[in-house]
Image (cartoon, rainbow, N blue to C red; front, side, top):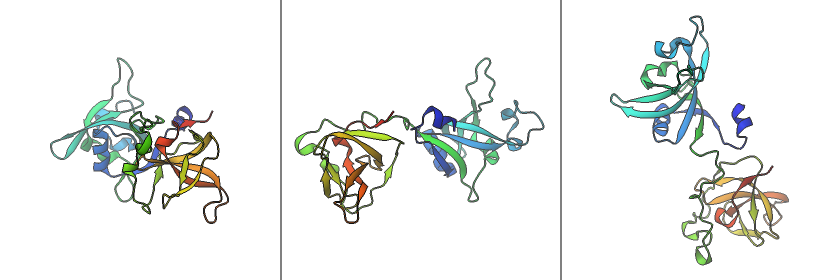
Length: 231
């Protein structure tokens, strides 16, 4: 809830992660993970700020990981209750030393809340090349095969983008041009395609069978402005 207040458009993810995949992604710098631990199962070096009677659960973060011998990892264990004086930088510890304290799903995955690197940024400068013109406009050389599923993700609440008059809007399955922007305006978005090429855009159209009113279509990200959150 605090993250939602501080960074309302940041796509924090909630769910369960496979242990090895989680550790490898942390090691690669892809994610930072918040996990829950059972205090009674933690090694002594991680419990010095708990009272001896505390047997509950506690939230901590795993922010760095390094593979080591024995099919293990050294991780940077960050505790929000860590002693601030003379300066708390976390505890580097073998994952195997506290892994049994982690809350898991029935199939053994780790219950986690995690954020991906740069997830709070609206758009990285290297994500989209909006400088293309002529036959390279929209980067058609990397167009996906029509009919393949287009997965929209990384959506942000109240996200819009400036769209110029005449910009083509595409059918979400066939990728055929359904209609074009009748005027220059800010359009509401609905995430990006998994390959980063398209954005979902809400368009008022009847040019698809059964459509009436706001309909989700696709638009080349290189043909629209940098996405922004409406105030």
